[in-house]
Length: 350
Length: 224
Image (tube, each protein chain N blue to C red):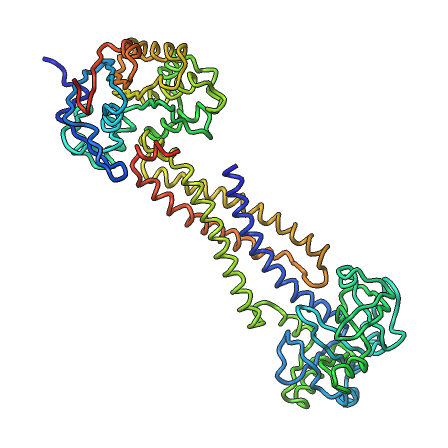
């Protein structure tokens, strides 16, 4: 039982770290996947905007006309984004233009907008909120009607008509970002250079650049956030493992006394405890990794739109290493204390 | 010329602290045990016999006085040397058996052999001891699957695996029923006779003490 509890404590620590890292990666990768799904070649964001910033709408939609006239531009369409809190946001789009660029949504239920009160939701959002076509949805102090449920992976999870959202936000004729389709993949770099020259200050990326920037290390704030979260996970995990190991070693004081009585040296006993701890940590780490698939399954089935957890293989050895180091530190202190104890006292420990 | 005693205790004192009180457990004890002797130390509870057992086994240091085990003065030994003495010269049998609960009977013995010699192969001589003890067929069982008598036999086997010069037994029959008590005492006497094993047994039971070739009494921390 003691062994099982120790393995479980280590497993919880590993699961906690891997889940938090997996959610962070999953959230960014989900954003990148949806951005790629737009089918654009170039993305223009307002001056001063950050990679993951959910901006309001500081760009005039007059830019669309200007961009459409540029050489090599096949199509330009803009969206506006209104954050809803948490990871959610609602996107206003010109469905016709967006469909031309991306090939359109693949509707699993219902279809495009019929009127201005209509909203389109992706399959994960619909699953999480248990929505079906015709259901009402209260967002930004307005009641929307679900017109269609589309296959996830394009642009956003929640979409309404562009002018409707602009009006709600009091930002008529303004956009959050502009997507551009080049007339040929060979012209993308040339077009990019042209736009950067003509629109100084604007954040202009190829979609490839933009999606590659959506990584933990590229997003400074997220990097710090992950650092803090992992730090907390490590501290909490360390305390859990330390307490589990401390108790385990205390309970074994009598056994340590027996080993001392039969002539085991302090080094032999400590070595035995450390080897055992490493073994427990390895089993705990494996159990933790397996449990991570459990948390992934729970998220996929309970909050598929809010949280996406990825399996980040790179973090398996890191989380395992943290567990091993935490466990070893947790066992060294009580281990040395027990070894230093008089053998006669240790033998009478109940 | 007489051989030097394998255990020699001269004017031994041991005081330890229990809570706020100093307990004077040994107060000038003197004892000599010759090689190959089976000696029992009889005394009532609190007479200091268990403390004497712990000091003789180098489990706890004396407060003052001299203890020579197999010619070595315990006062001259470092902690590491005391550890070496415990694994090579002295074997312990405790009242509560003190077997490692997670290991089989065989592994309980092998780990002690490994600590002393770095090997885990039983010698033919030791296999004969297992036969004498009658536990050869119980070696794959964990302590919880063994009776008290069987556990104590495993503990005796563990104490003898490295063929120590001295076997120290502290109330070895204290937790056993009368049938197992007789069997274990008979075994100790038999091991003493057949192997010439020096045995020092602590007991409060006069009948148990009668199995030894010599019995000494303890009272108030002294051998009388």
